[in-house]
Amino acid sequence: MKEKVTKVIDSIRPYLQADGGDVELVEVTKDGIVKVRLTGACGGCPMSTYTLKMGIENKLKAEIPEIISVEQVA
Image (cartoon, rainbow, N blue to C red):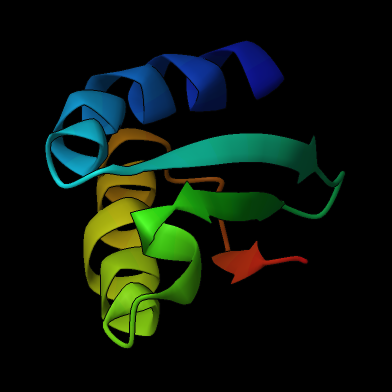
């Protein structure tokens, strides 16, 4: 499943990079939790929670139904 997640994240990455940010995949757990680290401008942005849930999580869930949620780690 990690390969599928990486592929979806790679498709999202250009949009984040356009605003000076990025996303790093940290872990995909056996129970469908994806852990990511937002970096660059995304790391300190007040809208990062929105980006994480409405952008990254929604896209991952749409592409990979086994994904339960996406969590941000430090």
